[in-house]
Length: 108
Ligand SMILES: [Ca+2]
Figure 1 (cartoon, rainbow, N blue to C red):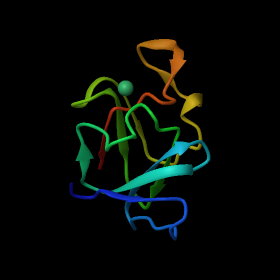
Figure 2 (tube, helix red, strand yellow):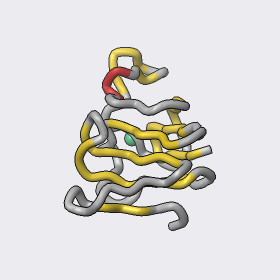
Figure 3 (cartoon, protein in one colour):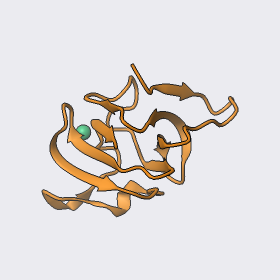
Figure 4 (spheres, rainbow, N blue to C red):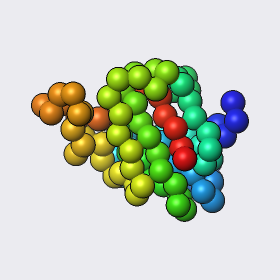
């Protein structure tokens, strides 16, 4: 799984120079994993499916998130960090938001 790293809260914080980290809690807290630019996951790593609440970007990158696996269904792209996905509504259903919805991702 190229680009995949995972650390517990107890470990020293690390992140890619150019890439993205996905966090289970808002404001970049809780369990997380990181990806380098140019990598993607057609399905989220174990325990992270429908569990992401914030996204931190490092360097010039764009992250594309998808509601379903295999880059399907609703998507959204971000070029700066997202402290709370609950603030972003789903394109197909404006009454719902992206919190705990991400099921696949690309980092460009
Ligand atoms: Ca989903």
